[in-house]
Amino acid sequence: MGVESDVKPDSVALHPVGATGAPEVMGIFGTGDLGRSLGLRLLQSGYRVVYGSRRPHSCGPVPQGAEVASHAEAAKEASLIFVCVHREHYDFLTTLTPHLKGKVLVDLSNNLRKGIYPEANAAYLQRLVPGADVVKGLNTLSAWALQNGLLAGKQVYLCGNSANAKQAVSEMATKLGLTVLDRGSLSAARELEDFPLRLFPEWRLPLLVAACLMGFFYFYLLIRDVIYARFPNWLDRWMLCRKQMGLVALGLALLHAIYTFIIPIRYAVRHKLISRVVDEMKNNKTTPFYFDNKEAWGTDSFYVLGILGFFLYLLLGLTSLPSVGGSLSWREFSFVQSKLGHLTLSICTAHGYIYGWNKFLRPSTYKWYTPPGYMLCLIVPSVVLGSQDPAAPPLRGPGPDPHSTGLGEEPPADRSKQGLQPRLVAKAALGPSGGQEALIKTVFNI
Image 1 (cartoon, rainbow, N blue to C red):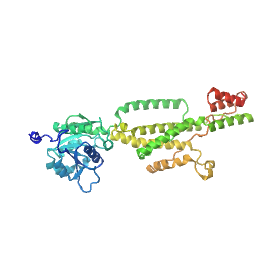
Image 2: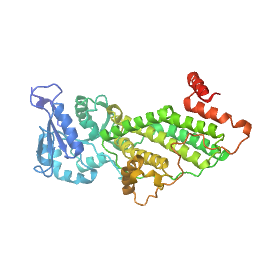
Image 3: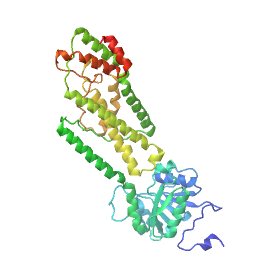
Image 4: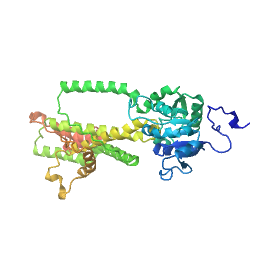
């Protein structure tokens, strides 16, 4: 007896996996990014894909091997149809009610935020097409994950009122390499639609505790020690470049961080410090040493912004890994690649501005009337940030002298203690090793 005679009127006539004969026909309403990505994966899994479009002859590119027809023709051919359109465009389905009777409609839609509509999208779809079996599912899959094949072992959720319809969708999802979890009837559709809107729910409590502790210790030290004027925060929205350019920027930031660590051991820096000590000893004078609050604030801000910017760069780089990006929902991935990218660019730009805040108006800065390299590096990010928010105030604030030894100047001290400073400066310049200390003692005869 044939397969058709064994199928009940309310069941779904899908070929079993591994059956011979013509491939199963899957219909897709919608030729956007999600519809094209899903169709590509279905074709790679051995299905026949038919797209339903309002303009079959001018709907844009579709995956090679797929067919494009009108909505009515696609509904006639396919028994399982994926609805890849927004809820606002569901009205056209009412005209297809005769063709959709007994069909399985898989609702993949999501909302921009919670509570926009009084009922779930899948429940609304079931009310529009009462003769079809609506299944809510696969809505946690993004077009990016489908295009890059990041589906193996990924968990998806299904819910619906028809057990046969859910079984048909579950078999298809398993063939794609997905792990299916049944959430029950269609009344759970709203819960499934809220899943992609969750933003790092398991991180909220740890981050809240960490933020409270950091805020407590910050204000405690602020009140207990010296109160500095807080540098103005500046965050403009800006779209990140493509992943490859972001990885290049991360590599350059890593080289910049490594170079910062080796600056104290460079020969030119050590020679400059030793020369300063020799000049002081020859002239029998001591450089005044006093604590400059402005320079200390600028230096701390300079290094803190640099470290924080590099840390955020590493987070952005980690999300470019397929294993990490595939585990994020579309809202989490958008948050990391958009808002966190804007914050990283702003912090790194402020890091550059603090580096040269007191040098922009110095004539000695412009050799041969040309700006230094760090000024040129600030042009592009400044233009991008300014174009996103023209009303943003310019960055101002105290900054460090990048060529400073960190020792500063000291007020006139007792003559009996002046002989200690050359020893300290020389030892700081050459490092703590015994050979270097013996060398400086030989040079200065101390």
